[in-house]
Amino acid sequence: MSESENVMEKIVSLSKRRGFVYQGSEIYGGLAGTWDYGPLGVALKKNIENLWWKRFVLDREDMYGVDAAILMHPKVWEASGHVAGFSDPLVTCQKCKRRFRADHVGEKCPECEGSFTKAQQFNMMFKTHVGAAEDESSVSYLRPETAGGMFVNFKNIIDSFHPKLPFGMAQIGKAFRNEIAPRDFIFRVRELEQMEIEYFVRPDDWRTHFDYFFDQQMDFLKDLGLSQNKIHKIDVPAEDRAHYSKHSVDTEFDFPFGQKELLGLAYRTDHDLSAHTNASSVDLSYFDEETKERFTPHVIEPTFGLGRLFLAVLSDAYMEEDLGEEKRVFLKFKPSVAPVKAAVFPLLKNKPDLVTKAREVYQTLKQTVPQIMWDDNGNIGKRYRRQDEIGTPYCITIDFDTLGEVPENKDTVTVRDRDSGEQQRMAIADLPEFLQTKIKA
Ligand code: ATP
Picture 1 (cartoon, rainbow, N blue to C red):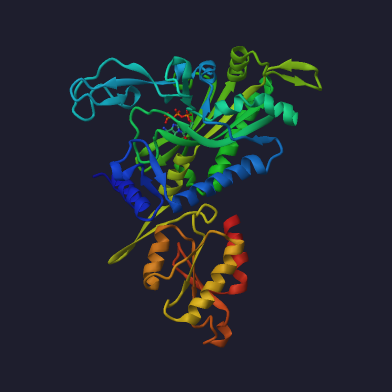
Picture 2: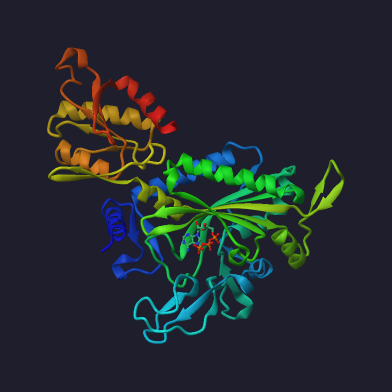
């Protein structure tokens, strides 16, 4: 087994053991391309989402959040070109009958070296029926990207808020793609989450906004604390661009299984607004009050795969430290993304005075920093190991000094740093500000 496969296996196993990510429908043998997030996974994912929403929506005046339906009128996907063009080239091995994405394999089957059939286009949208009649008239699709929900609400946003160009719409939600070969844990899945922005601009200004959003994407990756040397900018050549894009830059990341796409940035021109205007007969143009011109805005689309960001953060944080006999495994999350910011322990769980005091510290801290965990299982060493494995930056222990055994240490605790393992004594009263400062950094 190669080193990278080994690391991936350890990450998948830690994710399951500690409650980050479980295989979808696991007790039935799993359903390919689906994964379920456990309590710590949900917390990590929400932290990533919240940082994104803060940077791109809350901190700005020009962004409008929406949460559109996953099921959409089939004409949305006809007009956008997805029914005709959202497909991947599929090849089948003539010997073992396995199926692959033609652009992911060479001439021969990687499993049995058989030769492939000619590539056929395979549409990746999940088709379903809406209502009781299962015929062509009731066909609908689960959205393959969240973008569609924003284009169809463009006029609603104009009518409700009268925004001036440039402005954007932002959405976080599920999208579905019937991937030919889901793989690499949560990297390529069939049910995914995207965080997308459609930013509407004057046609002549597209380049400026495109470059600006690329920089914003990089800044967001810094918010998450990702290693800068693992991030790569890729100009996507015309033949590899999505059917709607005139210019695309992908951001790739060094995952344990190789350098792969993490984010996308596309210049979608007026492709969508014009196509929906034509197909729906509803005018999706924009009237500029200042110049008295009416035109169809162009669109810059920064798109972020939430699961891929989660995996980038998780795999980048995975650390092993050699302690001679033993190995210490810890997740070096930035405190802002860590699912648990601090764990509070009574030194001994059978000493009521320690437990009462520790409970008090826990309750107080939870009011300012909700992502706090109570842990009194096993000895301190075991608790540290457990908290290291879930990436808790600080462990706070209430000991006999806290209770006043050493008078000058009364109402102080030990705070142990995950990365260095070092401990310092700190006044209980200083803990909320200490944690808040670390989370904001
Ligand atoms: P790929 O080339 O890897 O199939 P893509 O270029 O088709 O991806 P986009 O259509 O640009 O992807 O989708 C936007 C973002 O959504 C991607 O950058 C990625 O983060 C995420 N994404 C796309 N497909 C998947 C998937 N099957 N599983 C998880 N995330 C995905």
